Image (tube, rainbow, N blue to C red; front, top):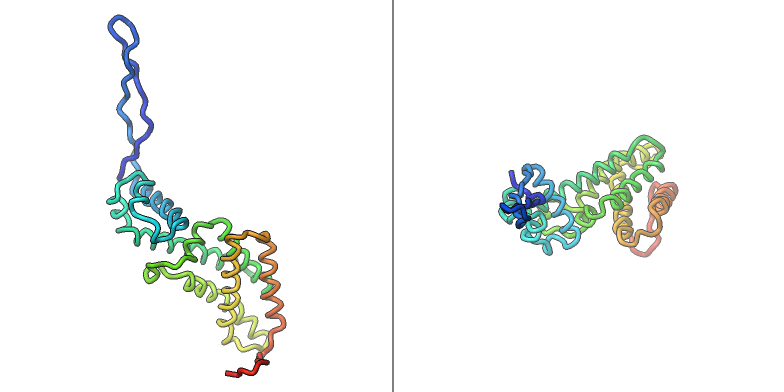
Length: 232
């Protein structure tokens, strides 16, 4: 458990003749921050700094200074900057994945596309710092996963839905994973672009994404053909 100082106060001394004396500061009282509270504080600070400066641009010294602790406290909780970064990335990946998969509720297939698009755009809007961290190139990707792997996880959820639709329409359901990757990748890359421009409004972005995806799927050929000269 670690201490965090609170505001100090003063007391006024009085001389023997009744005149006011000098002010003497009271001893500063300190409240204790639990290990769990300190860990959350360091995660919040690290998340903000990683989003703003990236992994390489953030130092343990800066994290510790903003938390008002010494460097060993950071090492005690996370083993170093890499450990803190890994936990931050893992939390963001789970948050985004849970948001998208949780949004895929029952409904018309087109509505499912809308739900998936909104889920990603909602995350970008609400957890902007987290999304900035996820789309950066991670120097410790082996231990934290990558944005590409996250998109693949989301696509896995979508391919089950597409597989059923393909089968119902007479298409080969084995191709559902390919189309799932294409659809989720389209939404994710558009989300990266929208992260900075924030125009048009979220609902309009979702509508255009679904417009392209749905009408593309609606006119899908069972056996697509190439019209150019290259055939292999």
